[in-house]
Amino acid sequence: MGRPGNGSDSYQDALQTIIDFLPSGITMFNAEQRMVVCNENFRTLLEFPDWLFADGLPSLRDLALFNARRGEYGEFRGEDPEKIADQVCDRARAMQPHVFERQRPNGTILEIRGEPLPGGGWVSIYTDITDRKRNEENLRRVKNLMSDAINFSPTFIWEADAEGRFTYLQGIEHILGFSESELLGQPRHTTLCDAGHCDGCDVAARMKARQPVERLVVESRNKSGAVVWLSTSAQPVFDQAARYLGYRGVDVDITEITLARQALEQMALHDPLTGLANRRKFQDRFQLERLRQARAGLPLTLLALDVDHFKQVNDSWGHGVGDVCLTTVARVLVSQLRSIDLVARFGGEEFVVLLADTNAETGMLVAEKLRRALENEAIATGLAAQPELKLTASFGATVVQPWETISLEAAIERADGAVYEAKRGGRNRVCLAEGQASMANCET
Image 1: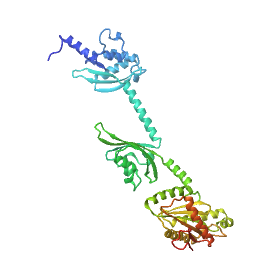
Image 2 (image 1 turned 90 degrees about the vertical axis):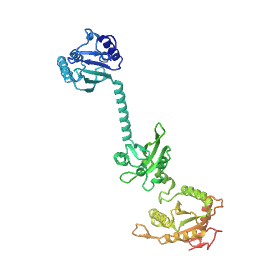
Image 3 (image 1 turned 135 degrees about the horizontal axis):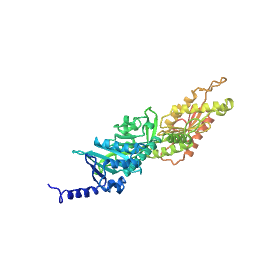
Image 4 (image 1 turned 180 degrees about the vertical axis):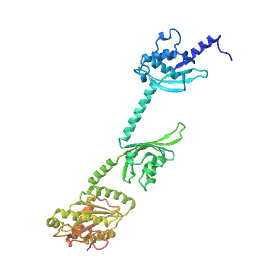
């Protein structure tokens, strides 16, 4: 196929028109280092003056000398311009394919690509990449900022595939002690749920259902085995065809907050001396048991007990020994009961016990078991004059039936009446509230 136009001049004009429309600067030099082609973008990007092209296209040395004199080659600053121009020409004679970046004195960043031609000479392409480099730098800065934010905060980010296996992690090591490489490819639910509870992990359940996760609290363990509380938020990820790809999420270490909250709850709901439930917690539990009782239709028993002659202990041996006695009573009571039962200290030497699903006969047997355990407990006082003390307690029991409408205060008043009956009967005994006898009213 012949060249377009009428002769070589027409072909040259057509070629020049094409390269003038290219967005990059274009130059072509022959083997003698004479420029044979360039476009306007080249002259604009390099800010060459018109007079440099007044007598036709300049040679490589002419361009290199002009650039050297105006400080274009920053790496050669301070050297003789003639020497710099010679060095540029020498490098061009051994032309190899190349790509490099150059920042001009005005701040513009150019990407320069050069390719040698088969018959000698070369073609160079100059592209302004200032905006791209600026965007890359901004992106790098944002990534660094995010990395710093993650690494200097109690947070880690993660991605998991459709099977729930970690595919990306950042920041987990300073929270859980595991390196990213140790957990990549591992299922999230077996590594971040507390051992033995993975199947019930709320996060795992949500991920299995492909539902969003919003600040769910997970009890996990770090590499050393210590408990770590995490707040997990995550979203399922889908591709453009709505195919499920996995999850992307963030976990925040809330261990300090959780422990602080637990400590506050402990203070708010427990007796500070014995660690037993206080009146508020006992009230809440009583109401829950009453609701459950209405569904199950079973009775519950309330025990009240008062340590016998406790004032004499404080008066004779001091409140320090008295506190030791109270903590011992608490320990003995808890040790003799089921995990579903609840013991509370209501103040002084008064204790209350809630026995779920328990009738009068069983309640009296439990109360008698507690009475005997306290009676047989030797309490170490730490005093040389009185190394050990023994205490007894008077117990009152009342049964609350499912159909009764009764408040906790009324139930305790009923049990207290039985305690007073036990006191009047000689102390260190168990009495059942009046009118509820299924066996002898008092046991000694």
